Length: 377
Image (cartoon, rainbow, N blue to C red; front, side):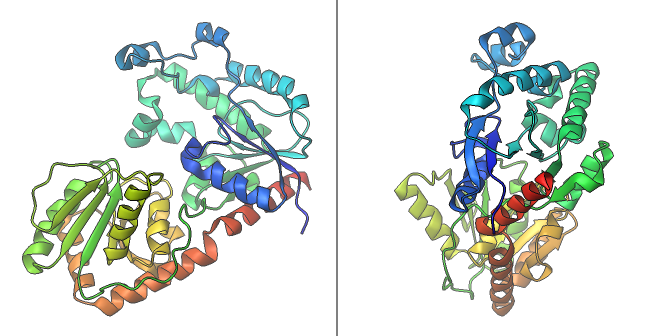
């Protein structure tokens, strides 16, 4: 099937694996393999003169002692217009294309359909403490936020298609006056390659936690729950990857941050995943929860908390969804897994099959290419 020649655009380096958590990097690479990607471009066309227009967050810069960007700057109506003009100046030097697939609110391309990926709208991000802090939106006045919301809404009106990650984020966009008819949702792909079938010791309860933000990802409540688990099952173990809490708990191993680009660290991470028999991340906030998909790709059953619609992206037979992070309830769920190795194995297999069928990058790229084709039709 022939798809539309598409220019991949990001706010930030479109060739970097860290831009937008690596989602464009994976997607653009797959679109390139499909002979769909015409080229890549950076929507961040800020200039030195923009310092006088507020692009630098002075307070955060003084606190950090290094330049920090004003998180709302690119959402403001005047700056969207400014970035649009600058992108138009850049366009003649870019490869020929029939549509733009853009990550992030910024300038609006002229003369071709725009498909934009929006993770969460500004108004929803501002009203959610975790996201407001993560995005840097918690430092602005109501007037500044209102202007950014107006700018984002103008940007959304200019889009032919708005792609977002889940039915929940789609509903937030509708509440921002984005017509439902132009919204398409599909989660990003799984960020790990298929490791193949893995043999595990399912007769042992080995819990794996992966997350850098220990508090936000629910680490403390998991430790509280694990104390109960360990009291009932002295062979149970918990491995913590990413975060580096100071813990002195029986059965708990803290591996801390493991850089996947470092072969030794990557091998240690792979070994930890292969040793585990259940993945548990009791986070109250995950806009999509790709980490659950990655765990399932390795054949692990997952334990997650309900919220932000992420449970709708995951098969019911691939794990357990809890209504909240109550440690007693969490401990009970883990002990039920430990008491039934066959259930762990079956749920791990079901989750893996679902991810392989729905969330690999070839599948996601084909779906997104279809969104672009719709925009051009």
